[in-house]
Amino acid sequence: MPLTTTSEEFLKVQSYLFRNHPEPGDKVAGEDELIEALGLTRYKTRQALDLLVQMGVLDRQKKRGTFFKRQATHDMTQNILEQLKLAGFDELEFNEARLMIELSVIPFVIQRLTPAIQAQMRSLAQSIRTHASEPTKADAYLMEFHLLMLRSCGNRVMEVFAGVVRTYFQSTQHLIKDLPKEYYEKRAELCDSLLAALNKKSVEGSCKILKAMIEGKPSSL
Image 1 (cartoon, helix red, strand yellow):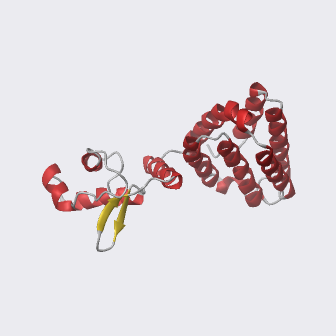
Image 2: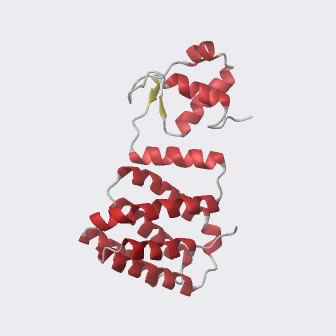
Image 3: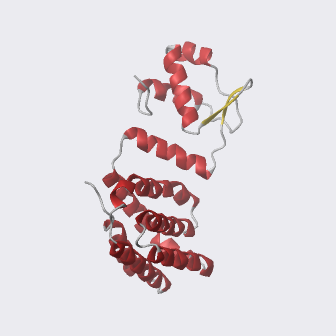
């Protein structure tokens, strides 16, 4: 049976490897050391290491060994997404999470929204409107609108959690193919209204519009 991030064997290996607070580039303990220290089989030990490589925590280098990887924003995002997928969360849980995440950043977005980012957001809203009859394209532009808003808050942690938003959009691709043009035209209107509320520095108004945008997303649940 494959290991998951909640398996006892995986947690033992992870805890052992990180016990001394390693730095990026440090070499990882070998399989023999892990087997002896933790009393695991070679098969389970290798599975745990493979999972850490898949999550972007470790980096295998041919003929050199396995090393701790420097966690760039993209790597951390992928790490979180892999764990979310392994845990089997559904689209409703992703949507609840993104609702909390996006609403929480509105005060920061209001403080830090630059004219350049506003112009990009307006352009994305127009692209949603232009491609309203092409659900796949319109949905991709809508996703980028939400991701840009998260990035504009200026908090790198939110860039990592933006992966939840991306995953939600990807997980609902099968629901959008037959959506009418009017659905995305309404999304474009809401994007414009949100930008206007942000410009007025209205936290309450912005949150109300954003909530309508997020809760209006189709769901199979």
